[in-house]
Amino acid sequence: MDVLTHVRGNLGVITLNRPQALNALSLAMVREITGTLLRWRDDAQVAAVLLRGAGREGKAPAFCAGGDIRFFHQAALSGDPTLEDFFTEEYALNHLVHHYPKLTIALMDGITMGGGMGLAQGASLRVVTEHSRLAMPETTIGLFPDVGGGWFLSRCPGHVGEYLALTGHVMHAADAMAMKLADVFVDAAALSTLVEALADQPIETGAQAIAAVKARAQTPPAASLAAQMAQIDTHFAHATTLAIVNSLAASDTPFARHTVTELRKRSPLMLEVSLQQVRRARSMSLADDLRMERDLVRHCFHLRPGASSETAEGIRALAIDKDHHPRWNPAQLEAVTPEDVAAFFVSPWPAHAHPLRDLGP
Image (cartoon, rainbow, N blue to C red; front, side, top):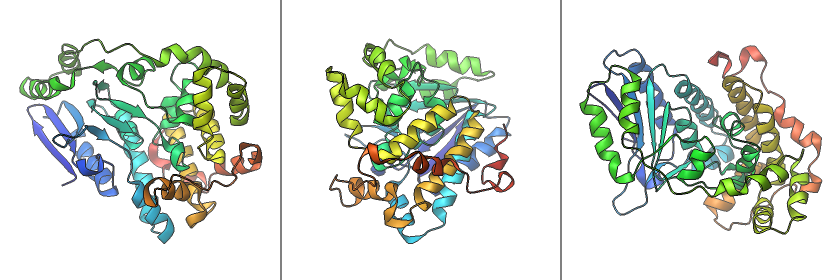
């Protein structure tokens, strides 16, 4: 089973159990997690839910590395309609976690990226460890930071949301906490005893479980990203990605030089789409953001169908052929037009027929 579930005491535990794939999400996993949360929502015995990832002995841990991008590629090329189901149901699950009426705890031990962030960011308590590696790296495959990424990245301090969305920068625990993407630091070795303690004690209120977690909290190592905030806010406040890149290129700091190098590896078109996504999401509700992202991901695979999709090409270069030389179209930021970007933000569905129309406000 790729998802393991059990109830012990008042604690429901969901374990992503696909460690050989870093617990990447499949459609079957999304459906199992959703079904479990819906059952437990109405189960009086379950007072709190804990989400964690299964590990492999001797290997670095992972909560969840994201969605199954190999499936995305195969489905895009073959026209598999379950690709549509995956994104609709995954985004609905993200919304469910954010609005779940019971306490939820996410143990973001190890790699927590993409779809893993979508699951964890909705939790009531987001726990990180010394192994945590958090990121929204979708622009590396010609995608955008989905699963509610527009909503939670845009609520980071200053313009760090734009920075994280465009670069896919990987954060350690302290940076995640400083950027309001994690709540508590716990030593990884203490996680098993933490779960035991939560399962063995009665949980009458969420506050009791939160107190049990925070009782094991420690001070993480110093944050490093905070030292770059002035530069991030200076450069990533510009209106377009081209203006951001030009601003960085005019600066001779190590941060600016490294960031320009990283941005030039990404799809120029999807960089600009991602920038506008975060900017628009800043004034949206989560539900409206997820509906916008559902529009965007549909266009990622259908505005240019099959192998001509930027996303299909990005996955090919990273995970299929592994040549790490994606052929982006257009190849330069200067060639991206406002019309190219605007097309992504036109919904392919009328409001009454949108696949996420029932999410609510």
